[in-house]
Length: 267
Image 1 (cartoon, rainbow, N blue to C red):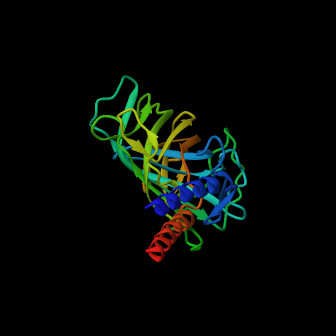
Image 2 (tube, rainbow, N blue to C red; image 1 turned 30 degrees about the horizontal axis):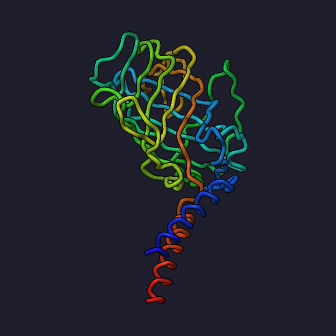
């Protein structure tokens, strides 16, 4: 028993030392430093959102441009994301707020990145890529689902009204992707007493009327398109990340099994 306890103590210390010295890690082509003091802090300088005028569903897409202050997060590729499935929640909203329920978000590694030059004044030209990418180069990096943090079903709260939703915040649980085990931590506390993996917030420019035709948003009317109100802006993501959890877990298990082996040999 003493040997087992000792092995467990050693495993804890080794895991701690690995975490303290992990430095930059690469998962699916995405590079970041999990030891950064702000971990996890992701920045998205490019984001597009829209509300379907008929269904009132909130959706959009964007590109993650930094993680923990590190800008070159995807050498030779880009980390884009899509979100959707946010519909009006039945929970009572504060004055000027709109509550949404449900929702999902998926991050994709695209090894054939588009060249973008987007400023606050320019219309967003980012293509809505993801699982439907026709060149087949995309890799599902992280899949998330909306986490209830207010009322009985609210996963996202937007400020103002549907005609002036200029910022908002939500919570997400990790459910899949090659980086799942690096972010599935359930360590971020929420106001309703629950814990989630990632929280996010966004700030947007004023709304514009448009029509989505074959996945492309345009300002001119097109009866074959879907009427939307759209906006562009930026977003931030916060949470915690784990450096190489599988490798460290196997190493710790090996130490524990080794302790058992030593104990059996002595007996």
